[in-house]
Image (cartoon, rainbow, N blue to C red; front, side, top):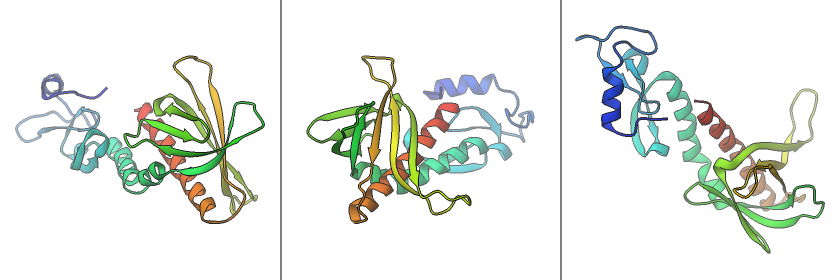
Length: 203
């Protein structure tokens, strides 16, 4: 999907006589540049944004095309603000499938960002790339769209053992203490993570 080495990048460069955005012809004055995210070649004008790309281990800002820079900026803000919330975790009432009885579990993202860990009487893991959909559950909806708050989340995912989707319902506690605030913050961060994941798959 992305260039893996300088050799691959040079092959793409050789086969790219024009900017892949504005089609300006490359010459001595119009130099070609590579987007560090998608690997495509562009002129300086079409590849002038510089944004950090932590998921590809570019900590310092690197050159990217305009389309990639938008997604990378969102990812950078997510890594800067939301990733710690997900790793720290929160407590929910977790209901599996169509079962009515739930179990109080701690939910958190693994340190390597590859799994969701759920710990209660039992422990199980969901591989993040196998998550199909994430839906935030809210209450207090008004016609104007205001005054809503997150109360839980539905997560659909697949396992290695079966291609049939499974579903988990995460419900925040009903009390309004600090645990409730942590749970709501975790739900918001998880929703942002899912949006970034889908945007990355679309690219």
